[in-house]
Length: 525
Image 1 (cartoon, rainbow, N blue to C red):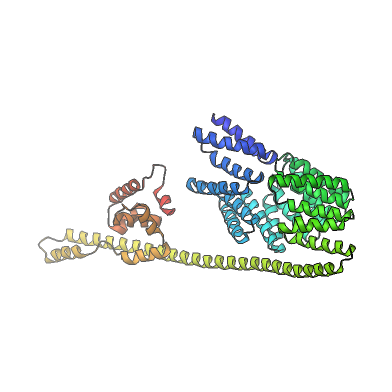
Image 2: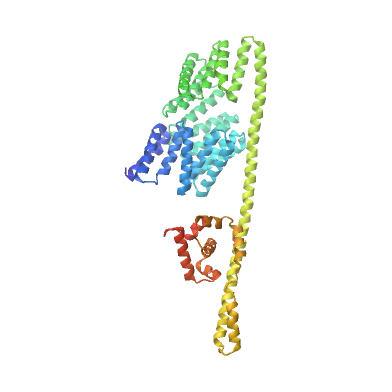
């Protein structure tokens, strides 16, 4: 395969990533193999990043996470900061999905920091958007909204602006501002339509439908649930298709279209059991709800007892189950069980409120810890900068003193040359010059000051290049301070030619090629 063909395939992969993830996944696997086989490594990392994203989009989250980890390691080796930042952000999102919110925050902030450093606007907007989602999970809605707005401003004019629009819409929904939520969702859909991005529309359709459902506008909700289902069928993601079908079934219950509800929910349950999806619990719950509305109250209770509770429903579903129990037992006039489930519901809601409070507290504590860590890092940075300034001042003073000492030596030599050799003073001056040091630098003091400003440099230099001599290490230290050969010459009392020879040997031991700058390589240590 030629480079031009790989370029074309990469463009197609970028398109399929959002339009047809299943085909995109197949293409990304083939592209990775082609890049490895042909040696065209310039696209390899990007293909792997797309591959990781497509694994997650098609439901293979664990495999996607491992591929992102591989991308991070390879990006570090190749010093590709763009891929490193975006893969790190994606790993943070997966952490959040798995409810490791503290770990997610660390990775998302790391991804944001990398994006800001290299000016990657898309990476910056993405990290900000995902941080908004994270703070929303913690219940810190004001902070979440602020991050979502920042993400929106960064991504204006880009197709990826759909991320902050989705976050702003979700936050508006939580706040009860349903009209704003619908407006943000529809604005996001307009961007997706304008850019001909099909598969990403499903979450927008679903959440618009959810808002309409909360407002009791079930016919409008059905329209958007059906659009969501049609979109998910193109992706091949069974979990997304199941979700759309279950929500359609639940909406049909609200519309009293019981036959349609039963058909949709039964189909979704068959898929869920076949593919071992966690969404089967929702199928059972809505089938219990359907039985209740059909007047089969005992059957509703049976489904809850047999199929729902053993699967350990989440907080939201548990609240719904207890409510359904109470309504069913009330209509059956089983007051003992009504009282029992009313008590369970009260206790559960107390537990839920406590859990939500703890989650919010954990978020606040994490923020405080992060602020404290940032404060400590800022103080440490200020200390290093102060030490760097002091070191620079000391170096300038030493250079001046060394220059004065050299001038003094030359002056004395000039006097000696004018004095007859027979004069006793000439002999005495020659003896004094022999013991006059050529340098004024106290290397022990200087190196201690340098170590305080750059504590890891000499250790890393020694570990990386153990063959460097003491003088070569000293010259590396001076080069690290941006000193040029003439200045190093004066400080070490070596000729400039000698210094250049040392630089040549240092480069050789460090195995640097012609294009690599010695000073820049030392700055990396």
